[in-house]
Length: 296
Image (cartoon, rainbow, N blue to C red; front, side, top):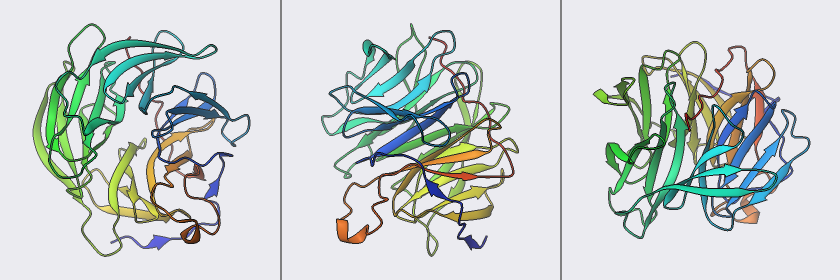
């Protein structure tokens, strides 16, 4: 197992503190980082150093975002629907609804693949039944359940060649791996990594780097870990917050790893530095990849 490394350059960059920060994505065209606070229904943005932070409030849960390929703005998973978001001014355009979700289930994490499909997971907030799925969405087509069921679906992330999808079963404490085709069909499910060892947190959001390794945030573990394409733990970096939630590469050279976190359920006495819910940054030797964009 890789040694746990405490690095002095893991630093908070956001002025805000999220209740449930998630879904970081770097827009290389605008050189800005965006992320969401799910429970407050807020979309935040800043530059690579945290300057110029902005916030747009939707008035409902905002669970994940992905960039659009041919237009400004985002495709987003709201509480129980998919929508298009535009900024300045804020415009929310509904695209699809999860018709059959139980009341306790909402959208969770999401990303796009290289073909422009938007993948969004769902989460049973009661934590008592595996009623969450990973869905595939392409504008103009129905929402399609593709992997599951899980209590809490996280990720996904895609390998550099786009041929492998990584999907997180957070309550099951594992990451699954699938082969993925251009039409979005999945095949050859296998367990990629388990998180049941000493010191492990619950696997949460994740991102692939240019070498095909997987970086994953560990909720409750105060760390992010780098796994090889074979699922071997190569590196673990401490984060000065108990509940890191996701990570994404950005910055001018895509060598800065941005890490979101959550303050949900953490007492002030357990967070003396006031860092729960912050966005952190750390510079790495191996870069990431530009975020894939939605075809709509």
